Length: 236
Image 1 (cartoon, rainbow, N blue to C red):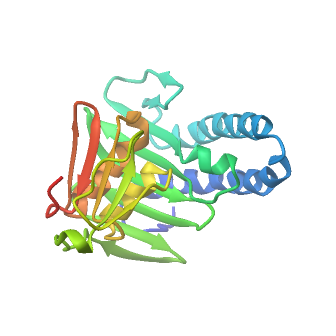
Image 2: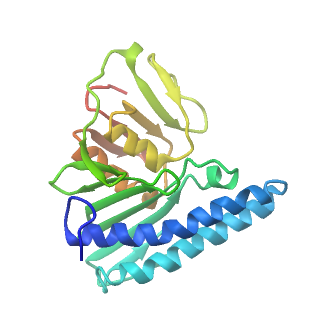
């Protein structure tokens, strides 16, 4: 196959699967505005869209590694016990309200280690991706460039993303809550945020983001379930 982005053939096949699925999501997003008068109808519509993502992308991913299992927030399908695709629609609550800040998070894990990570924003058509040991990148408008975490450390200069029930004290700087943890982690990796702090999240939503942050030179931890990702210079 022709390589679309810098990386392995498997990475490119996974991106092609994301693009196929994203085309349907963009159509769904165009229809969601017609359902805004009924939030319940919108939620039901998005739940069906998320289920369709899993169904559609699984057939494409089986061409990448046929014996791999699948893990999503709602589905766990056993595979060969070695390889597993980890998939989530991050920012579904934004999708429900016609907010374009959502993403598909997809990771390939082998022997309990994430080897390939992709976080794709269907509306912006921007992909953040990484392969273990090969750095992290962003792809948009047919151009890839390497990304790295920020170098900021002074409290007044920081932008910190939150996904918590109660806003935690911030040393200083700007606090943001975007509602899409997968993209928040991608933003830490690309230097758009300096850190991200969250209450416990479903592993499917953060598997790809964890590798992105680490490959971009940052730090990631999940202590007692809480998620903390930083540029390595911020102390939280």
